[in-house]
Length: 634
Image 1: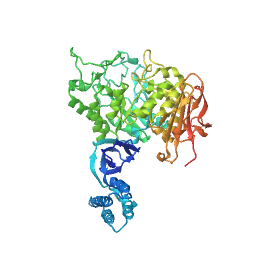
Image 2: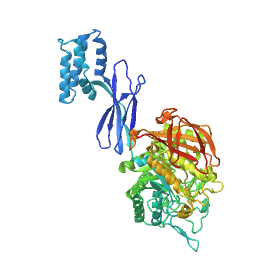
Image 3: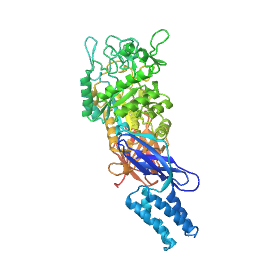
Image 4: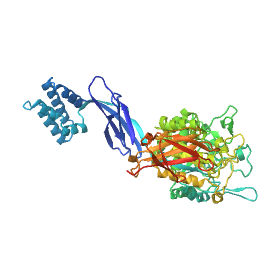
């Protein structure tokens, strides 16, 4: 349900009305009456279910309620004997006017008969007024008001997207690492799309919906980065997949080590067969060896010495990457970028994780996303922008359906409470947060030093707080060693092959995969976790115990029952915490002070809770309660 609201007012005391006029993607037009939301506030609104994917256009229409104004005045004047015949004559005029406004013949006839009754002086004043107040007449006029002074607002567009744009569990991995093996001469045999496909069933078993892979294009050799971002690559180093472009091609080409275009299409189909979707990484930048450098030098920034500027984010330097210049030839750059995205939608890709979109103009993204989504309405764009709030919000407003967030750096109770409140209220209308717990570029100090408990805590909060979350492969194995001086893993997979023995870790009980699986099972089973705006912060006496609930009314659940989840998380991965949790049960439809049962969806324990509850959370056992409020079926 989408809430539509407007401020509607006029001069004087005459009554008014307002409608929401909506044109659906299929061209059908609906008119929906707005109701006053609160007397004296001039706020009007209506909730509407929009069940077609695509762009809706809508506007508000306010009008003078001529019949309602007359009826109000008549009910005051006529019983008091004031201007009786004048009032009946005015009412009859309105009814005759209404009978001629194109309404159905039976309604027109009813209005004419009512007008004649108002003018019948042989009847009593009370009987004539009763005709004007008759429910049948009121219903006919409600369906088609007798009105004037129609005033229309500006037309607006609202795009309705498929459920995956707002909900989902993402899993990132590098296809080249799956099946990779080191040869005796020190060189590597790269993994391929075919070997990467062998990993898909396990990803699906863990409950993930989206498989995300970094760029799969040819990688340049000029200034290629070596292990751990070193400036000199050895003869067997694969380079960063973000150094896009080589003799084999650019953004519309596939790295030959991974396979052919046909192999890629087969991989897309293999992902679909497992009931998941593929997201690919689009990074609009080029290596010095990209075909664009010679074919389109105007796409880049040329320095006074004649060299092309490489990418920098001080103190980081990316000598293997040339950023694009969107100002030298805006139309040419746009045409080429649009071609690139069309190429991949043509191969069956519908989800794009866009690298560093904040370094490109907002107007570019607004136009491109609109064009792609018009041609391919089920396309989804995820913004990978860890930047200033205004830019992150701007990217969401111009069309990105999802956004990376600051979650990785919000670790304390106060930080998380403030951030969850912001995301569920201040920006919820346009920004859909995707809580990745880690990425191939980000290993925060919390994960570096939080141990196994830290990994469980961050995953549990991410999976329950927002409808979209994700992990980068290796999270299951608690890969927590950072490269000195950097917030990223040592021996970063971005610069080298990283095959992992998943099966051995699970056999030894050293994998977080079972916990991730359980989190995704809980997410699928509980509709309350599929909503963003329903986060409600509760209280605890400990500054390390985060408490929040998520509730959805049974009117919006498949089984018709209310669904409520309470999350109590010990944010300290190194110490047992005991405290009292203070709930406001009215926030999830319960009565304060009345006991209710909660079922821990991880441990299967059941407790009776109320407003104030003792908790003990051991990070070495279960650091987070994910509690389902047990209610009798409706």
